[in-house]
Length: 166
Image (cartoon, rainbow, N blue to C red):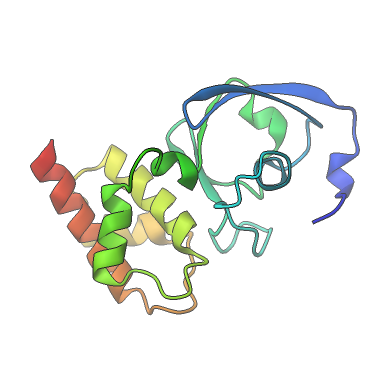
């Protein structure tokens, strides 16, 4: 939300692929990815919440792995592929998002983008996760509203649909 002390060092050009598009951003090497996405690139689907890596609201994919953007520095993204929730739904609603809608996997929706990213990372690497694998994949995401039942059902539905369409 304003200047952050880690953002005041010498600027450099961060080159990465963002949601499938080659992107260059003038920033500081130690600037947090969360602030670059939200403040510089207006990708506000990535939520700002705890800013200490405990809630998962700021989750994005970096080279296919779910990471907390509030803990990821610009220099760590150099040459990497970054996908935000906006990239997940580019063009049309993703089957994971559809499953969240159908199964009531959200209430206030604040945690939902981070949940969607975590589920995408899981299903991209494991199309048929068991309950323990789902629990592990979602362990970095906190939802304060739903009680997780709808989220759990949404993960299972999305996995089932992905298996039947591939």
